Image (cartoon, rainbow, N blue to C red; front, top):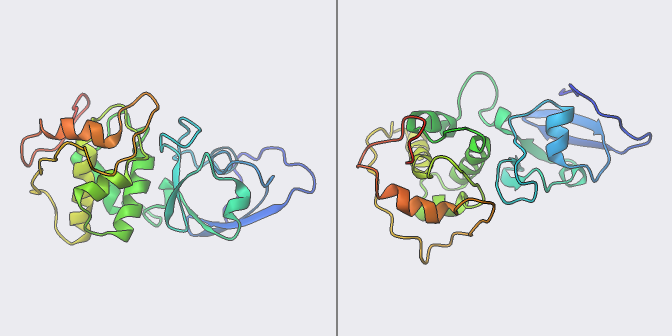
Length: 222
């Protein structure tokens, strides 16, 4: 049973919300209109889920709700009653093992400052659970709700490709870097929050990456 690590004051008579969090049952007396992101971070100490724009545009707070990615900053506690919530801490199923997407992000340098990475991994894991061998267009669409201000998105795309290869039993180390067309006509939702949309930035970044070469360190714009 998951318990509060830093409980906040709860009004007397508050409703009890019962749900499953990272595979374990949770019952908390919380106001129904309280945000899931606040309960995760403040009450339960699960700070892997980040707070960013707080209006559902950046994707930093992404979690899985019954297997589907949702913004925890827009999800109220009454909406998760009786449902399954998975955060970045539980994406691999517990223990020291890494989810295929986590491993791929490490191997491909799909992060820089790392603040957006938990949300990216959540969205990518949801995609691969539904489509184990996605096209580039499907990856771009699935991650269009996640903003990154550092990487240029190329390493993120390679990481999702690698994760798909890992899921197929291939190591993915020699996956070709396919040249993407410009994103005109690709169903990518433009995002405004001080950063380019995933698709718009990715098309530019990918054209500058030699075949088979992944991003490796800070300052890498791929």
